[in-house]
Amino acid sequence: MPVWRACLILAVSGTVASASPFSLQLSTALGWNSGVLQRCELRAGDFRFALAGRSGFLPVESGPEILVGLSSPWLRAGPLSPAGSLREACNPLGFLAGSDVFVQRTGFVLDESFPAQPSGILLMPLARSLGVFYRPLAGGGEWFGCMASVFHRPGIGAEGFLSLSDPPARSAGEEWINLHASFAGGRILTAAARLLVETGPFGIGATVGASRGEISPPGSFCHLHAAARAGILRFYFLIGCADAGYLTPSGEPSAEAQVASAALLLSDSHGSIDIRASRVVDQSSFAVHSFLASRSEASFKIETTLPAAGEALLLARVEGGTIIHRDVEGGWDPASRFFAAIGARASPLRLEVGAACASTEGISTLMTAEASLDHRGSRAGVEGRLLHLDTDARAFSTGFSFRLERPDLHIAFSAGLDELRFCAPARDLPHGIRLSLEWKTREVSEWGSPSP
Image (cartoon, rainbow, N blue to C red; front, side):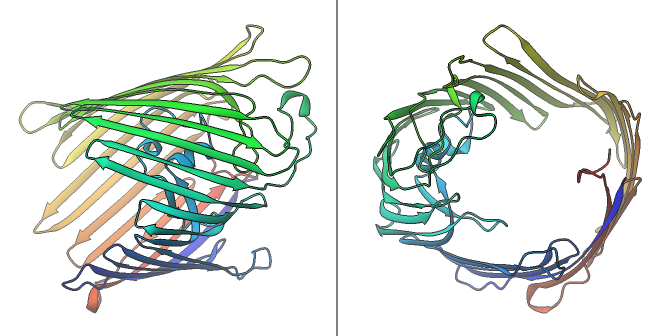
């Protein structure tokens, strides 16, 4: 049975700036389900201090949570997430072509989310180049080691890490026959090295990692990522492999054995084209009757804007994708989705009509109409939506929104069959402080997800 949930958010934020690169941001939010959220962030050059807290006021909520983080060129402390080759080693073959992990510097970055990564410390005697770290593992145990990032000259770089962890042993679940052997315990030695080369429009990076457990066999993984750019064109390519013996610092095996991925991006002022394809081969089971499965994915997205009569513009958007799962016996389970929309814009009006077809959801239609007015720095807009899902429920969804923007006032109101929202930031207060008020309700199904 659908349930309506309400949320009231009262936020105060401000920024204090001076001639030096210094900024302070404060915010407070009150949510019916999430409790009280408070954030404070101080930035001064390369120095950053972040403080975030959450406390629940309902019996079902957990106790107070406080996150404190510090980041500077030589020290990082608080909730830390791995980056660069450390992040690759924690999730081998879990990334596709074009991912930012292949251009990240090896190290740790602050994590301010709830729930956040475990709190740890990264000490860098040589700023951003050489450091030692310690951080508890999310599933229990400890993780410590050293990392280095050395750039000999522009266009060439080398980095890597060496770590020791002691995750707890895990027992097999009920479906153990379809999984890998559970981690038996013991310390794990993990290491990885990465070489980056960039010359002109071309760039290539290679990462090699290995692990050896105290009572586990050795394993390894490798990545080769290439990028090329020419004007408005971007191309990315990735190949990688891992063997069943490789263990992450937390004791998890690699779920995939091979991955190949490519991405082609083209974008300018008239539109964009995004084409991606990948193939992933899963590791075989350790059981007697082992299996080998694969997953193939392909997607594309095209957006364009064409000039029409007078000052009118013609808008077109097409996107789609297919995922195919195959097992060793030749069985396959495809899932696909296709969406197309066409519209026209002639200031101050816009009309767009589209349709989507998904193998698991049937056919849906979407219609959007918008009217906007710009007068002496004040803007007003009205937008309406109509969505029809051709599923077993044959559900309809509508939406309506109104916006008013002035130099000192911003009001937004939206309503639909499944959501009602009001937002009205007030006039800016002295010293760069702004007060805002937001109230919204949303219909949630009995499974906890928004209704169609």
